[in-house]
Length: 305
Image (cartoon, rainbow, N blue to C red):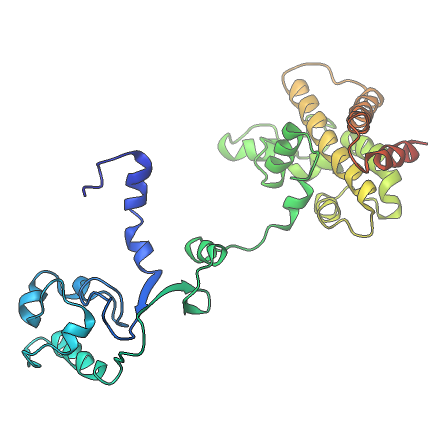
């Protein structure tokens, strides 16, 4: 069948045929139900892929032959000028001692430990995909009850894809890299969140009560804390993660407003705005009777005292 026929999904599946073939082989028992040419029963792979159409003539074995028929072919063994053909002839000769009428042919699937009679979806998935180091910080970004737009902003920030001034300078040399909010240092992600004197005050007002003497305005320390949780309880960890994402989104929005010539609002006003957003979120969760969220609200109110 041509790969251009059928639906888009079907054409994609057809392109995976070669990959799928590498995950399946036959273990020879009696050889009754294994195609000599088209099944993978030999360590060298599918014989047809090795020899092509010419192989039927060179080997003297018909297209529909089973392994048993090829092994006990009455024509006898031949000597060939091509080394590969002689190797296959030798393998057929050795198969005489392996075939047994008492054993059945068995289908095998590739697993992480090698070929096995059982199939594992999870292991197959791991074998076909490209493995990479586990990204630990994702637990601090994509967590239950997070606000999607805040989580998305945190994800972009973790990848350092926000258009801070240091990144803008890479494609627009000569641009002023000074922080838009504090006007006292080069604006980078780590500076803006939360080494900047303006944003740092907002983060401290939110997180100091939860983190206590573990409080930090260093990006790497904060991300490690919200990802692993440390010794924070479940409720405190939720409050910290949500406060972090709320602060991130609010500060970035305020930074963009100032960048486009709007007036910077006082830091105390922004503190109240972020605090209000977190309170509203926790109150909403409690009103929906989300299990455990009463504790989150109590934790948050406790840190504001």
